[in-house]
Structures are given as structure tokens and as C-alpha cells.
Image 1 (tube, one colour):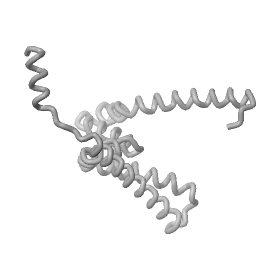
Image 2 (image 1 turned 180 degrees about the vertical axis):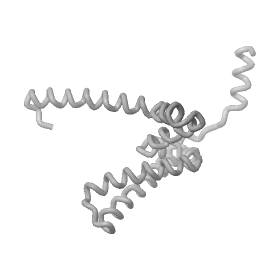
Image 3 (image 1 turned 90 degrees about the horizontal axis):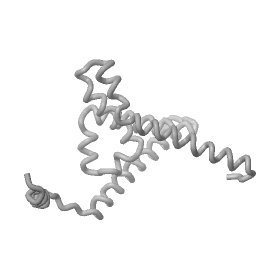
Image 4 (image 1 turned 30 degrees about the vertical axis):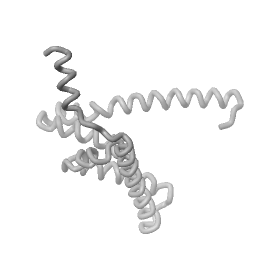
Length: 150
């Protein structure tokens, strides 16, 4: 196919996006996720009388579990199509990436399928997260040695 013909077809098929609308919907999705998280924190702390700092961790764990369940039931991707980055950037997106990669490898068995694919998408996030935390920690340590208090 000639390049000009390809460009013509792609322009004709291109979906017009409303950037402001997409940003507002993503903001709404992230806000609803934050509201749910705060509701879980309050539920754990006030109703179940869990220590306040522990309720933050329990809220995160609950959101990861909820995202994993919704992904395995094929609902999370539908929500992601609606709310976009508002759902895929927080910790729930990390859970979704791990579970969806595992589901793809399910037919290949536990070891070569699920085990191998589990960290295919999340592995780079973990790798760069650990690397960045080491670099930031070293910078922080050097600043402390220089007498800078942060």
C-alpha cells in the first residue's frame, strides 16, 4: 500500500477525541477511586476499630483485591474504557496489569503460563521503582551527611 493511501485511510478512520472531556472523565474516575479509598479507610478505622495507620494499608490491599477480582470477571477493562487513566494509573492499574497478564497465560499452565506472565507487564514497574528508590535514598543519605535536614 502506498504511503499516501495509508495516510488517507487512517485520517478517514481516525476517531475524534475530545481531550477536555477525556481529562474530566479520568479525573472523575480517579476521584471516585480516591473517595472509595477514603471510605474504606474510615470503615476500617471507625467501624472495625483498626489502628488509623493500618487502615491505610488495608484500604490499599482491598483496592488491589477488588481490581484483581474485577479484572478476572472482565469488568475492569470496561471501566478503564470509560474512565481511562483515572483507573489505570493508581495501584489498581498495577493489579489489573498483573492479573490480565496471568489470565492470558492460563492455558499454558501454572508455571509456564501464569507464573511466567505474572510479572511481564509489572516487572518493569517493579524494576524501575526499586532502582529509583535506591537512587533517591542515596541522594537523601548524601544530603544528610552534608547536614541538610529534609
